[in-house]
Image (cartoon, rainbow, N blue to C red; front, side, top):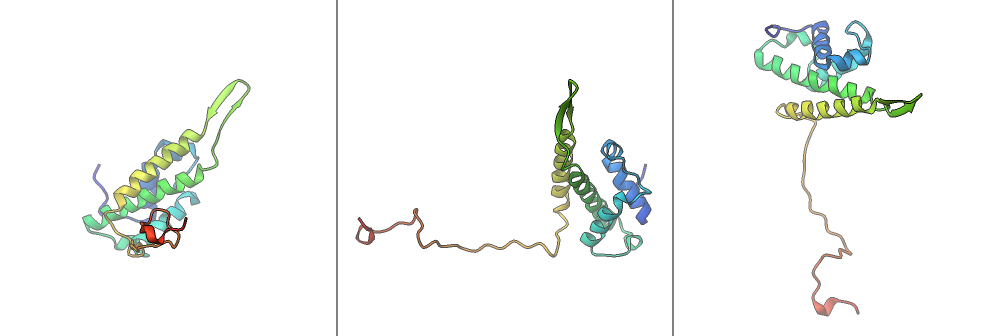
Length: 145
């Protein structure tokens, strides 16, 4: 199936739901409910536009899909953060495995999205000098006994 020539908010939410696949189903998420509203908002903020229908070129759609994938996995990771393993009536429930999976998928999606730099993201390097740095070289004449 070919990727759509353009997206609407509904079709982008459907894409996010398809990306989450069984995880979305396990979370009882539905495209028609509000589960994908915040990931959609975050996607549009990261993209830098309010109008998803204005994104038309293939490169723009690829960026949109990449950002949407990242935000869908981020929301799934946040939603499963309180899932924990427990044992009851002789059965063991490994609910934390879903969170572990969502975290791994988010890291992958975030890595893929790094090719689209966020203008609000910046890295800077500064030197830091500590007055009492135990690893600093001191000549013998400056050492205290």
